[in-house]
Image (cartoon, rainbow, N blue to C red):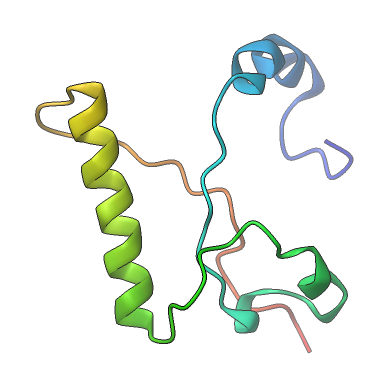
Length: 88
């Protein structure tokens, strides 16, 4: 919110429903994490040495979600991480 990524009014409206959302472990690639943020990358899947293994793990999470929630067809995934390496 400090970065004003979401309008404050919108953030307030969705705060309660989003507080109930389970946060899954993510994949970690140090190229996409700033030097000062590396220690905070703690909620990550472990032992995924290659990009292919990371992709497979994410795909499996999506498949499992669809199965558990009875989703038949399209599933939208919201990506909330950085999309580019930090500037040097």
